[in-house]
Amino acid sequence: MNWDALIKIRRDLHQIPELGFKEFKTQTYLLDYLKTLSPDRIEVKTWKTGIFVKIKGMNPKKTIGYRADIDGLPITEATGLEFQSLHQGQMHACGHDLHMTIALGLITYFVENPIDDHLLFIFQPAEEGPGGAEPMLNTDIMREWKPDMIIALHIAPEYPVGTIATREGLLFANTSELFIDLEGKGGHAAYPHQTNDMVVAACALVSQLQSVVSRNVDPLDSAVITIGKITGGTVQNIIAETARLEGTIRTLSVESMARVKERIEALVKGIEVGYQCKTSIDYGAMYHQVYNHEEIARDFIAFAEKKENIEVVVCNEAMTGEDFGYMLKEIPGIMFWLGVDSGYGLHHSRLNPDEEAIKTAVHLLSEYIQYKSK
Ligand SMILES: CC(=O)N[C@@H](CCC[C@H](N)C(=O)O)C(=O)O
Image (cartoon, rainbow, N blue to C red; front, side, top):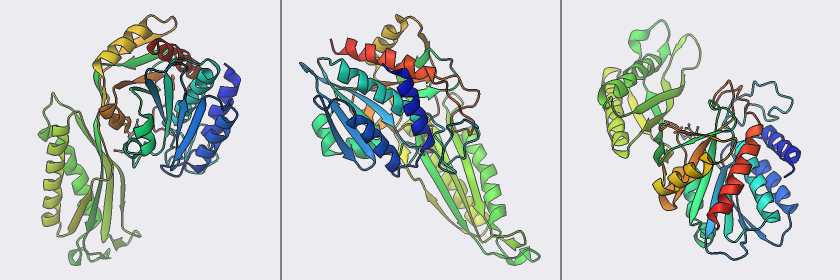
């Protein structure tokens, strides 16, 4: 494997992060790379900004899948790296540049070292939203090339390189986006009694939302409500007529998601009455939990534990979301965390994964896939 070439690929991809379903340059870059590989064994099909790559097996009995997400985030990069993002306000701050590079490393390896089974690599757009996994699953290409098992990984800044972490069963939470619009009556800053101020209403609502997890969810269960963005008003001396909260809900069960939403709706109704305004709630994109197939997870953990230079952690569930959960709902498989040792975490403008982890993942997965194909 030409590791220097893979590092260059990672850095090239890092420079061109694009948001969900706008990954045009990324798709072109990936397709250009795939054209450099011997065409005899691979078939490539595109879907929107995503790509399916099938590597034909020598004596196939099944198809093994690997999924890499390809979109970036609306974050202004502050790493100061020489290969930092060229796209103002956009960054690969969730490691998808590494996920794609690892997929290309595996494709290159298996084109050069064919195995018995078919392999399907899925480059999936829009993981950060609105979600590309579910629509990709529903394509004719996927119906035709559907894998019998599927694998994905996610970088983990908190673990050192060489560590992987996973577990049987639930790994990532159920998620739902949350958008709440408030509309009242604006006016002059000096005449608040003639208005219904939506900045005040929005602040009250953010505070009240904090009681849902602390008072409506069983302490032995887990949930998260995060409001990541508030907008409202126009200038400092005009009382705001509108405000908008944007956030996300995370729960460990589908039932808790329903309960949390019920409570949010009740609080929003209360704001409507208490602050004399109109409200609306939009749940945006929702992701199914990531649930690892127990037997495959056990087998993968046992396999990885035998590898030199790999430390396996059997981790707790995380409140992160991943639309790979939809793929695992239909296809038996696993997701795991890949240690990349960064002082800054996921979705941070200074996230700086150690590129050595690319080698760890390509070694581990090429060996695991060969073992599963025997
Ligand atoms: C691994 C990761 O960070 N995934 C994202 C998925 C976002 C889903 C959706 N846009 C939402 O915010 O609910 C995450 O934030 O966990």
